[in-house]
Length: 464
Image (cartoon, rainbow, N blue to C red; front, side):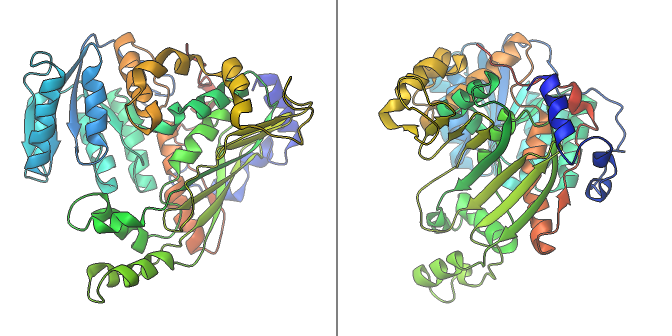
């Protein structure tokens, strides 16, 4: 939104002006905005160019191999080290990196494994330019912080961290070291999400008012992974925590549609409610013996969590999470504006006055084969430029697009598409929702990780 539109919006909302500064919710914000700022602001930060990007990978069990393979195929890259707790995984993907490089570009891949702290030794000995982290959630923040302290830019799988204190420590370290720390929210690089971002920037739906986002993905099958793999550690989160444990896939894109944390608006507060916790317990009882470890857990996390976010301008976001219930996959991906709506799952569009040549008014959706005309007109330039190169990289090509942009920004000395503060804002939904649920839906304030400097951060541009 343009600044003049923002001023108009501010005049119309009850949260405007002085009302924001005296809000009792915001006044109690955890680690409040009084936290000192005496380092480099990372909102629009661009690091010095890296002609060759030397990368180390920590964690090559699930997500890590895909990141490593596509990175290794890009020009001007070098895989210098791989670390994993398991020796077989480290050796397998170290050998694969060498193959991708034709035995030349990635010929000296150092391997670190079989010890919980092997990754620390790797940082000391190899000194990579960048580190990609794809481990279990509890390690994300500690590994990111240590890697930045050792001189590396960090690209971490979602979520950025588990607690607000960890998020603040990530922010503080990034600012103190002048190193990027980007949470790799790959959904921001999906075709529909990129097109909707482009349409929002072009003003197609007018002023954004409300968004809906979700991660609804039935993953009970992961309970089969009992000794190694995602299910071996993730199921304990489901049992012990009650809130939205995985918010960023749906939230990241709609937050960028709305320019949250950049110039126009920011996250203000959240309320959250969970359903009873039934599905995981029933699944365990049906599929495992009574004395199995999955039947010894006290499942506390509700099957479905629904949270509502309020922004400084009074706009709203409904965000849901459910990895248990039997239903089709959905991220919602909805943005409602004053002139129309863009929605997902299925992809569909409705605009006031209709879409030329397709619909007569906003009472009919443009969907299915009709969408081809909109793709032709509004496909994001980045998607059109890189789609062919990213095909086959995972999740419909979004993983490759993300990796290509990461390397491109590092090599050209550009600001990243997602900054450290955005990763923390989006991840903060988890601990805030847990607190709200525990307090019967009581509003929880978002910390301002930028200490007010989000107003100086330019909106994400439609890069070509």
